[in-house]
Length: 296
Image (cartoon, rainbow, N blue to C red; front, side, top):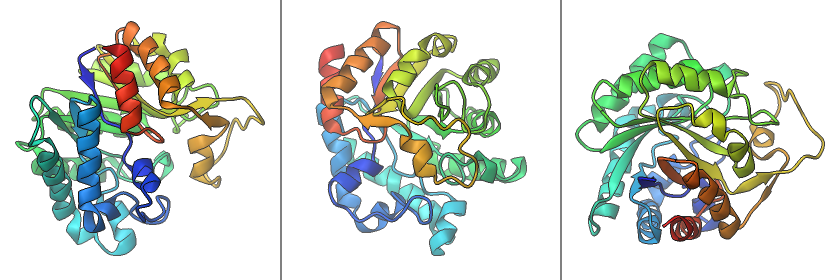
């Protein structure tokens, strides 16, 4: 394994009792760039100290479509730049730490039905590329919930970056499908066709990732930054539909697991050849420390 990513930012801010607004209705982690930049920086630093050699900029919810919820769309460039500056400050006291610029979904997480047409997607990712080029070391297109958006984001990032990671999200009860209903296997095939350097799964329960390692291993390189949660069957909901609260998608039929339990899953991913491993929701620097120790 070559890289260790950092832990999830949103849930860690919440764990530190930082007041961040609702992710379905407001600007979620983008709010911390405005009101709690030092906390964002400290989380980056603590992840580096725990063993991360790649930190992701905190602009996941900095998109014009999201920012307009609070009439902040005019601050798009300023807030993206702020996320880069904070990451740069965080790594300044360390050696050999890379900054991954986040290429997030343009709309609410897990809602590919809200994704606008290709022209708007291209414009958004082109703008993001212009801001990030020359300031970050690589790009991670993260939590991609449809093949269309993932491929567009990755192709645009690849215009100027050699190291582009394309990270998919799965939301079906067996972890085989993206929120769009498309198969993970088809998403990996699509990524391979455009020459994606590394394809990942993120924001998914750990054991569902492990269940689909054979599919992930079809990528040129594969990686994982899962939620610190494990899937447990209860009352299965196969088709949650557009009107169901996305929180049900996010944690449906899962239970939280400890850093050591997360690390045991990470060891399986590393042993199977993962190129990069980190953490998403409910992970913390403690998770990164545990996985770094067990992997190294």
